[in-house]
Amino acid sequence: MRSNSFGPKASWGLKLAALGGLLFLHVPILIIFLYTLTPDETTYTFPLPGITFKWFGIALQREDLWRALTLSLKVAAVATIAALILGTLAAAAVYRSNFFGREAISFLLILPIALPGIVTGIALRTALGGFDIPFSFWTIVIGHATFCVVVVYNNVLARFRRMQGSQIEASMDLGANSFQTFRYVIFPNIATALLAGGMLAFALSFDEVIVTTFTAGQDTTLPIWIFSQLTRPRDRPVTNVVAMFVMLITFVPIFLAQRLSAQSSDTEGETK
Image (tube, rainbow, N blue to C red; front, side, top):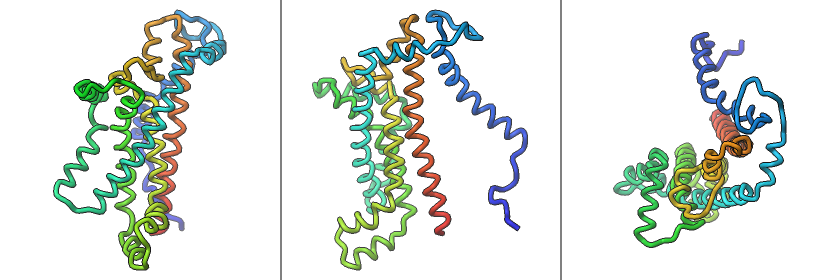
């Protein structure tokens, strides 16, 4: 007889609690989606007085929206690349080396994700201003990379800890140099962790607003564009359309990262 590996079924109370949590998280998002179709630009009523798709066309014709979207994508891409490099190197150093203060360094690497974004933003603005560094595209990247590194670091470090150290030792014993060991042994083992961490970092950077607000200067990323539109009631339906696009864009990498992590865990479980 095939055993149930998932344990006993959940009680109705637990199921209702899970359903309540899901509704609490996602009903506001569904409301935003709903009001992208309203023909009334000033008031929101339910049921809708009608259905229209004109706001999608208006949003796509906004040049300021496209500039903000382009800047957000560029910042997210560069911040993700920086996070992949720095996060992987930091994870390798913490995993492979036993030095004084290793746990403190690990804590400092993780700390930015726990701090409120406004605290990180104010700290960065003060630091950059103290060195007379003008706010620009690269200061936004620096701000976003501070918390993107954490995601990559956690994913790669967890994968390193699940690796068998004997594989690296065997590779070195067989005459492989450091580059060959990384290429043929280490990289295949951490590839999915890098991909998952990179996609999560991209999603976090793309929809971050607080750090960008305090480091962007005159540049406008998509989250700040949305925030600025909230003061214009007649543009509220367009803002809803853009918010929907942001949610969809960030949903894809987060979903793929979750699937990659789940598949990697299942594969390791079957191997063991």
